[in-house]
Length: 415
Image (cartoon, rainbow, N blue to C red; front, side, top):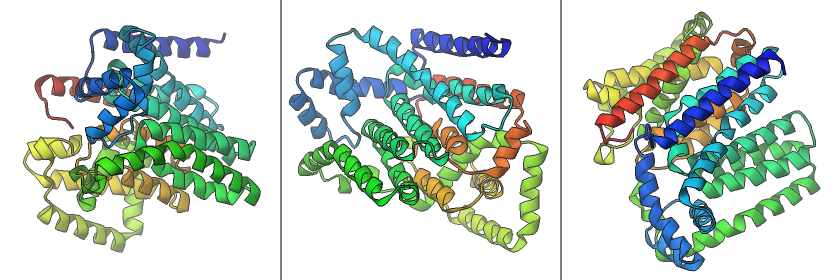
């Protein structure tokens, strides 16, 4: 075993044991994981009494999410005690950074020093939402694992490796992720769009039939759900898409800012402004108007993301919109805009059609999608030249992690 492999193993074990410690101390750095665990216990207990009994109860509570995960947990609790399941879930959750690392190696295979990619992957261990999901047995991590597996298989298709087989597994993993957290199904259109370009007609037909078969349980559940509850009238599904767009931009900045806080990143933004003066003035006018007329109120002071909460705490929306403007500049200067990238950004935006946008929806999803799915030559150059400063990245994410622990230690308002 080489020194580099030993070093990576020790770092990974360190982070893994930190998850075990979080489990022991019942870490709730995301603020809502413990609440989610306590609320969803009723679903597990009812499914333990019988599948139909649990399903009727679940639908009767008007839950918008899928019951799939709670059915699995209920079945496992008939065999194992809760502590064993929780410990197993920590082990399962620890596979997410490993899968993310494999995605990075496929996406940036020309990077000689794989240590650099490994450090980026291990940033997931500092995500308060990832850690809290691991500690409190929420379904977020499991859904992310299967979604990441779908990305991994999707990347194989881009390298023309067993294209049909990899698309088969890609959609299979995506559907599992969607049955756990339904919003991942939005990426079905991205995968299908790419499949139509690479598969023969007979292969595409077989793949569509396969997807229809995978969707049947979901169609069955939705049919039952509609009979008892008109989900289209739910207040949770009546978002303000304009307000949500700003929240979306602010959250993107929150996670991607440290990656571009370097000479190259700042120069790219400056160059874009100078080369697109008219367009930039147009953007500034939009943000000034938005700042003057923007109002965003969340139910019970929940949601909105950290940047929005900070701007509200200092009682000024100017800060919020400046951040949104910078976030948009980072996107425009570092992403190659093509149909695929546009569909990815649109999918991330439309995946959460809710009146309240929580930051946990995008953490650590943004990092996985940003580095795993998007085609971006500028980012690839930054990685090849090792312009991402690891000390800065880890300091930033560690600070955020500690901040979240402190914040939720003194507040019950969810970000």
